View 1 (cartoon, rainbow, N blue to C red):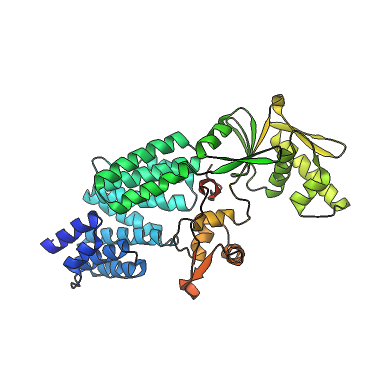
View 2 (cartoon, rainbow, N blue to C red; view 1 turned 30 degrees about the horizontal axis):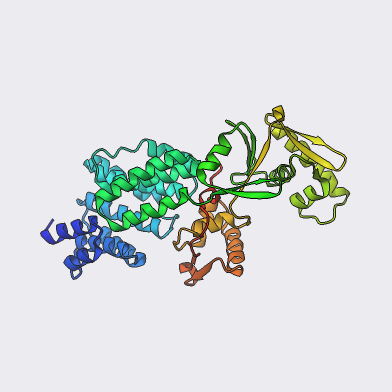
Length: 406
């Protein structure tokens, strides 16, 4: 590798894309194309970056497998930044295999971090957690240590572990300072806001109190029966009854928890669960069936008692019932949380992250556009969706979680 390429690589490592371009801007060889692609990615021109990186990968000869693997890894990182979650993950897996065979531990760790970050965007928390636990950085550079700590921080947030998140954030801040990369330091400071902003609301006696993530963790760790509206579950200590795939039952449970310690009227429950303003015999029959199913699901944690006007939720052992609600109430809350990162998302990427169809994502986007909370840029296949960053609360507990993750 010649001196210009070496100098450009050092500039990119230090977060100086303009310095790198100054050294290779007029060159068209594969190594220079790769340096230019990475520089354009750091400058935010992701489309041009992907084009340059693809040209570089195609230009490297059959014996330059390591250089080609590095180009493919850089393209995977650009695809992740562009929220192109449909980018074939097997390509990154092949690049990782090349790094392992050739003994390139630094780029192998970088590729693994990209895989974990993609899993996080898709809501596959368990898989991301297992991959992060197996990650070995060794004596890698400070920037990789900072990125790995940010990944651990995000995992802790998604798990609702405030203390673990604080430890990971401290590690990320220290490593980012050692890296001397301004953009990385700014990213760490921005991430830390999630620990101090309200992440949920505790509803009791008709009043809502905002909670930080640490306070949410304390509520979930209490011996009380917690109706968790953020993850759509009933919790008591280590016992969890998930209801995310049974929305009607959770709607009934939330109505009972909101009315606790009093009773929830049948008419109110019917309106909440079925959207009916006037109850008829069919709705009352459906309510009885739904209550029977909910009573069976909650049996380890609570019982549901019929009253003259409706139903009452009673925790086992006569303990209190606490209702934990999301920071905002909106059918599009998960979509809004994804868009709140400030990146431009495609409809297909949003559908993948939400675990829904593209048509469902399009309807939700249309509702956000009508409410002035999202906007589209581009046309046709290049159309992307943007939203202003959500201010005033953390979106951590609004983000979607796949059915396989807890």
